[in-house]
Length: 379
Ligand code: PLP
Image (cartoon, rainbow, N blue to C red):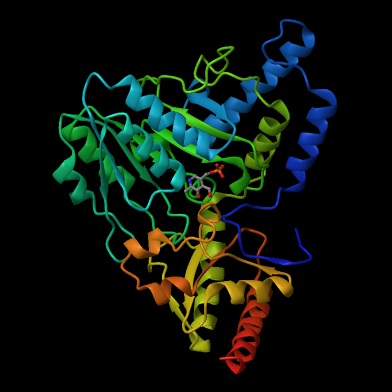
């Protein structure tokens, strides 16, 4: 798909693919029944729901009954974290996570802290990596939940979830949750390989629409629901399932290119961008060497991010400072990675999708050179 603009903000959201748009339209027109209704219209919707769960489940190697549809990644994270903590509160009090999680995890943890849970947040090293060894020091038999993201949304750093899982399981009976919102569809994910009990993902990061996500919940784990009502999704997520958005999500999953092949293609694009950026002598790289190649965080030294972003936007080139959810605030993720304020204030996040090209990178870099030349005159 060729867009009439250069869109490098795919970690914030992606353009819906044509298959998603078509199936949402089709579903709104034809499959608008309520899956809980007993008549034919409802049964048709229920059949689509069951088939949607099969598709999602096979994309992460789990069972269909282990998938709960939610309205977004934020809701999946809240349900996982608050639901697991409430369910295990008689077995212990300690919850472990990291300081670089998405706000939908950090705020849920803050809420649990106000309810009396002990929250321990581990810091990353300068590469945004939280060593599994650090978990060894704090996981004990009072630990009921560990929540760690797979891919950081600002730097693309990847956590070693399988190793963390081994440590968690060897030292506690805690539930392991993984926020895989930025990794789903980009890295091969199998729940058994990761060793997680709960895993969150979101449709709008993989060319589906906003308003749909899912939580994988292992059959071995119990959650207390956070939404109360009609008891849909096995009582764990009340509210009539949004069949149009679910079907749109499924279509986006079905047309996802082979993950490893696309990872190689994106790595090439990433290397190309990095090399060209390095040659400008204008930037420092904030993403670590072995990050997810869909996210490249850079600092344009001596320039504040906002005027750069505005100037890019005027040329129909869209990227961001970092997390869309932390608009206007200095990045706590980059701070945690040890960067100074000047470097953080000049940070830009370039995030790719399968639709980006080398030609777009060439235009982006020429524009970066022009913008910095222009801004320099006003210094
Ligand atoms: N977790 C991470 C790592 C994210 O990057 C995001 C969104 O940017 C979310 C959770 C929240 O997902 P959603 O926008 O679907 O609520």
